[in-house]
Length: 141
Image (cartoon, rainbow, N blue to C red; front, side):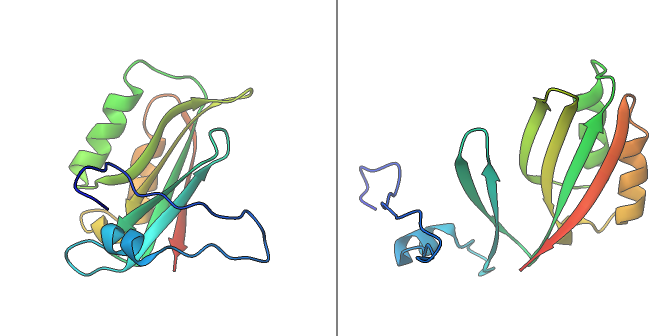
């Protein structure tokens, strides 16, 4: 990547029989300075944008929250739960409205779950006003 460039690009073929590989300059740019070598890859089907986000460990927790009735304080209360638990999100969708419901999805590095267990985190998230369902899904390499 030249010093006058903001992005790195490569054309690829979207073909099942031809796996996509990342060039060395992509990998070098993605790797954190601490030498970790894992990342979570996220596809948002509505935008067709793929994100590859480096993580500190080889496990990430996908936090899915279904909101029955959205309260004005939802995002603030969610932030308080994450701050109290010392959890930083790798990526968040923010609030997404589908035909049936309102959803929030976020991804957190499992190594950040030092102050809280997954069960306690799920309980705290379920206690936020308006939340109807919480799923925590572990993704691993």
